[in-house]
Amino acid sequence: MAGRDELDRYLGRMKPEVRLLTSVIVEGEIRFGLARVPPGKRKRRLTNALEKVLEALYEILPTTRDVASRYATLKADLWGAGTPIDENDLWIAAAAVTHGLVLLTSDTDFLGIPQLAVEDWSLG
Image (cartoon, rainbow, N blue to C red; front, side, top):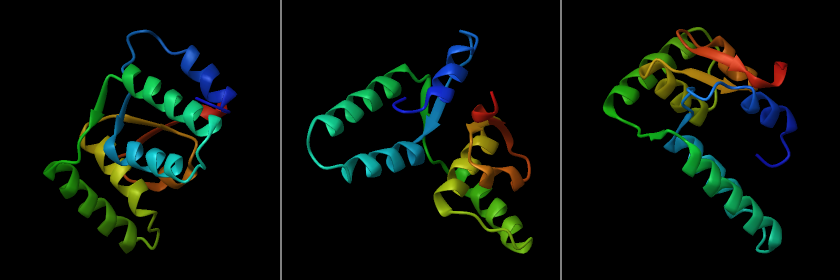
């Protein structure tokens, strides 16, 4: 996790039985960021780091019809409350809620999402 000492420390304190997962949406966002990095050593280093992280994960969650249904409900609720969020963040939240997972993030946009359990790794 290049450049995120706090995250590295947080992950280092996790119990071995904790299973870390991500979604294809998160992977896509990270790969988009990497695609924008100019060719060279830094890009190779970051790409290698990403591949190592992905290999270490328990699972990469697909976007399923259940996730799509949850996405629609969450989006309607948030729009109705006047608090819409970024589309990809909404898909990520929908996957976490659908699978009953805790979302590990430091992004405060996720805090107002009904039924979403959030843990902020940046708080130590």
